[in-house]
Amino acid sequence: MKRILVALALLVIAGFAFAATAVDNSQVVTLTVAEVAMVGLNLAGNITLNVVAPATAGLAPVGQTDSTKYLRYTAVNAGVLTRFVTAQMSVAAPSGTQLTLTALPGIATAGQGTGLSVTLSTTAQNVISGIGSCYTGVGVTDGAKLTFSFVVVDPTLLVVDTAGVNETITLTLLDAA
Figure 1 (tube, one colour):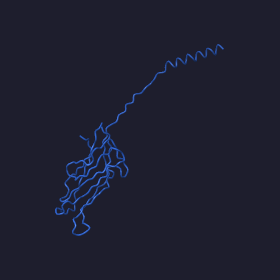
Figure 2 (cartoon, helix red, strand yellow):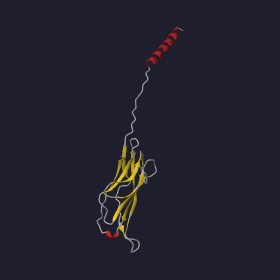
Figure 3 (spheres, one colour):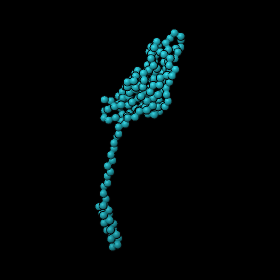
Figure 4 (cartoon, one colour):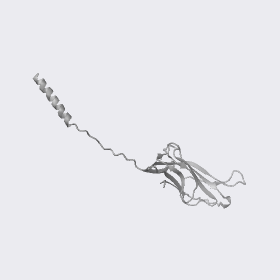
């Protein structure tokens, strides 16, 4: 019996000793949200737009339109900051023509901004404004749909150019001022 009491006493003492050495541990975890501004197109490859003959003799020549491109972007903005996208062409459109761009943001997530329709020039112009923290997605038709229209504005100024004019359209995602 004495042995049982000694064993119980040792267990109680060991329990107190174990309890006395227990220490609370904690870990500091720093959580940060980095600013993000990324932009890209859904498809690689060039677009070719031509001025073509009208359906009926006596009518003005017409330009073509392409709506195969979607502008994709991801934005994580600081505070209430918004962003915008500008578009700019590398050289002037051929005489008697203009190139217009219409951007129509998708609705997959909130904050993708408001699209505009502009006549492109060698000066950067806003085509999407009010972009909040958002992402457009990467599906086939996710992002802001871009419609490029080659427009004949004055048929009397048209001159045949079989080589064509290679335009580089630069789309830039910027912070709103």
